[in-house]
Figure (cartoon, rainbow over the protein chains, first blue to last red):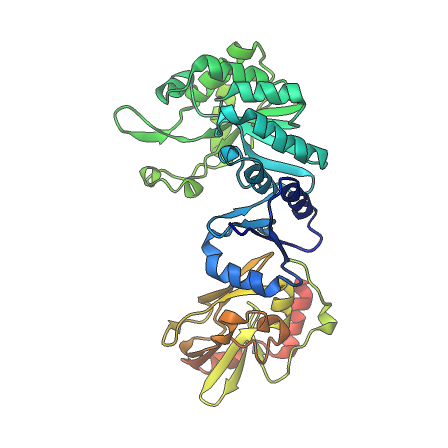
Length: 273
Length: 137
């Protein structure tokens, strides 16, 4: 299938992606959107505008198109070029320069660890650093990355109390193992978005401050440490776009102070975002 | 957004009227033509997409009427005066770059039938608009 890669003039990340495509023997047409590829890119953009991601800084480059799917960003393009099995691991990021983020370690297939290490190893060799995240699943992936020295920043996005994890079918022991591994990365933090919860009786409400305290206590118990970087953030209702939450007000940072207070009983460094 | 030109290098023709949202208007018989200013196109960078309304659509003054996008940014377009769209510059669908190359001529966007022609006098002259963007810059 014919691959086209649209790049921006002087885009270092685009060059890194193209070099990897070449290494993998993937043939592609390289079009610079400011030079010879301007007209073709404009036409491509008009025809597939709704499939093209725009971040706060505009269109994310490189843009890779195989005739069916638009893929964007260095991590996504290199991940795809490495192996289709890496699809869940790489998403669009928000960082630029030497950083690659949007690497979701819980959302990929842990059987594809070798491929993940290959892709990240290539990017590291090209001078990139990684901000990765996990929700607690796939601790074996974190373990492997630590062994390989891959990953500068690790974020664990806490999904709820131990009971809430269990209700979603997560293995508590696996989540606790992840908590301990997260704390071994050069820089890390635990993040708790105060999210809406659908209770057993169908009621929809925000996570309670007491439950935030319970999560912080679980982290302390699992890791034997009460001084982890622990960040509370409002859940973005609009971005979630879930109709079940339509009646809830958008929470603001000031609403999190009571949550912070409860969390500090077990995590003394708890702070609001 | 990154400006490519200094304000002194930009053109603001004297016969046009200008809005605070960086659109221009010029009377053309019973209708007026609307586009975006040299300052606006310069701030956007190379325009790659323009979304405009259809003929017959009506807008109040300051209402959003379209979108203009470059690789780096997206900007909503706001109607400088109220009126009904009578002609749309469909050439911009295939040649959005005309907005950069010729913002006051080939890059015009709409021709509208004004609802209240006195609104033309209430918006800025070239000199007043220049003063406004110098404050913004």
